[in-house]
Image (cartoon, rainbow, N blue to C red; front, side, top):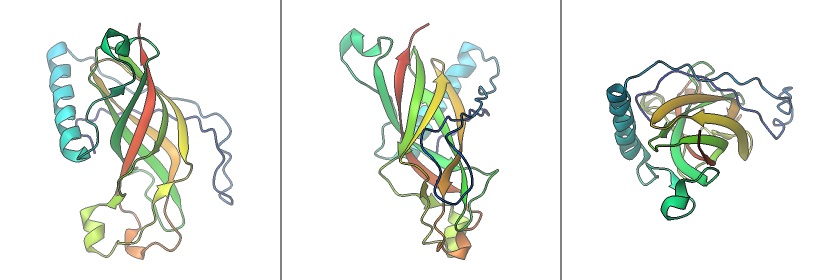
Length: 200
């Protein structure tokens, strides 16, 4: 999980429907709320970005700590160039997961580049979803936490040399037969985000 988060909340527009039986129509557009930002001078922003990069390296393990940009040379940063990054999100503290239930996914996105990034989709990463230490010690072993849909369509804009936090409502579910000790745990969730480079 990335540190040095600045609070913000962007609602995703889903392209696929919810799992059968939950009574929520995720095909309807969700109003997006831009992340709340504070004005930062160059030195403060540099410190925050450096800290977030360090956290990405430590927390993401073998995952990328930097954006992978399709292309080479100067063309790789052109407007519209495809970008992708592997991160670790987490289940939302505001909507805790319980067996058989759904909850929100919170993702912190770092953009260390000198151009803006627009994230267009979020999907599950390749590593395992892990519960917090306290709940694991209390017996949370089988949780079955997964994405409610294979790919989540979003529209997240992250300014150059900036960090932003976003939330995808109803993105996670816990298996109905999960261990009771998993109720209310905070889960670290590997994710892969893709999008494009943006220019003013």
